[in-house]
Structure formats: structure tokens, C-alpha cells
Length: 106
Image (tube, rainbow, N blue to C red; front, side, top):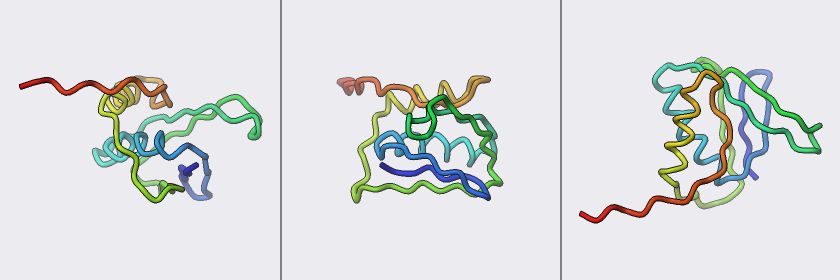
């Protein structure tokens, strides 16, 4: 399990490395463009269940900590879905990973 760490004082959210790698691509791209947006996630039973949301802003400290040594391969279809949902008024949330698209023959 990796960690998404945001703000000061920091909040820390445990997210599996594969999901975190995909979220990182979307979050960094939006923040690099100077975009602020909401990010929501479901809390585990150990954390009291329910869900949480935060407002991500380019000026706030952010850290992605991965527990694994190797970087997960990225699923372009999942990134595209996460980008689409991040651009809605409700903001970014974790979606189930879709099947990877097969490459188109040339």
C-alpha cells in the first residue's frame, strides 16, 4: 500500500500502489496546468467508513509514497477515465480499473 500525502498539516491516505500510480499521473497533470479540483475517496472500515473529499491546489505540498520497488505499468484507458471524471464538477474519485485497450493495427 502506498500513501497519498497532502497539505500542512498533512493528511495521509493509504491507496494501493497501482491505483496511486494512475492517480499521480492525473493529479500531477492537472496541478501542472494550475488547475484546482476536488479529490474524493472511500474510507476503510478501520478509518471509520464513509468517504472524504479535499480540494487540491497547486500551491499545497503533495507527496506520493509507493511501497513497491517497481513502478506499476499504466493502463491508458484507466487514465483517460480518471481524467474525464476529474474534469467534472464533482472532481476526481477512484474508479474501478477498466480492461486495457488492445493496440490498433496500423
